[in-house]
Length: 334
Ligand code: COA
Ligand code: ZN
Image (cartoon, rainbow, N blue to C red; front, side, top):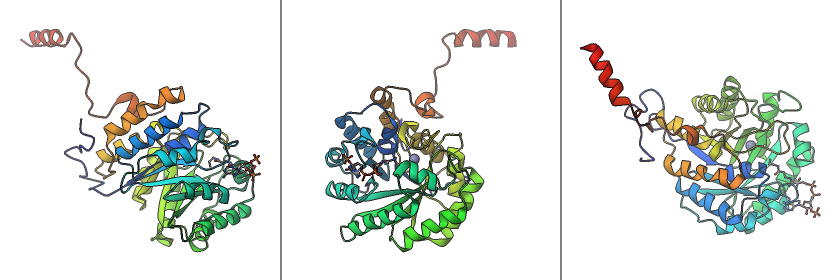
């Protein structure tokens, strides 16, 4: 099984080799939601396996309060012990200056700053008003200046809030404007924290962002909570997006967002996009092997349909009695 094999008819109608960057968030967004503490050595091995699988960026961990997210209390050690593959960006989520200092000290390539488009979710998740969060983000951005470490801002609930409902497009774009103009962020991630996004909405927001900030890295971060994850990815690609967060095994979910569940599954997205002729750079065999290690580590089954069903052309043997079935059918023909 070659991980890079592309079907003969791939790209005939769609991808035509267009590069789509898949960014792994399973070791952060995924493991933060787990009650089991995955041992540090296993986390390091998972990140190394993900590097080998060809991910463009890996959000390795989060430098948050160990009381808030005990599952990631070993952030320093993980980031220090992973093997850095050339070309892969190793990022970490940070909520404040304290987190930024820890992450820079541990040689993160990029800091992923987070706040929410909705006041309620911002308060629930970060215990601050959005304006207070923005000021905290500005302090973090100031700390990174001159260090060579890049800043990305993730805007949670950009497609709706589980407590407030719809978030106006203008609200989302106004926050993006401030990240680009005032913080000098290299990238912005629009997060669908609880799977409220739907394809036409995604296309509208993606096109609006792309038109205003063509030079800013745009990432879409979907959760598959209502089964719309892959449809949203495809809608975003058609509207000009080329970067997606996803989580191997389909694990994940914000512990401070009611009803949250898994991210879109990296191997499902890579599998579908490869069939459609997009270049994801992913070695599916290696990625599926990495995801296959998760159930034993987190103590439960994972949502990944590819781990369950295999790839489209991973064929099954014919039934044992196949020859006699065929003989009987041929005899009826005679
Ligand atoms: N790293 C380590 N410890 C930190 C920290 C960081 N980046 N930020 C705060 N802390 C510690 C403080 O030292 C303090 O510890 P203490 O109780 O032993 O004194 C404790 O956390 C509370 O700090 P405080 O400044 O009062 O912040 P808070 O209680 O308002 O919490 C957050 C704010 C955002 C730092 C905290 O809630 C958090 O880390 N949340 C995680 C959010 C998250 O990851 N959500 C999912 C992803 S979107
Ligand atoms: Zn998420």
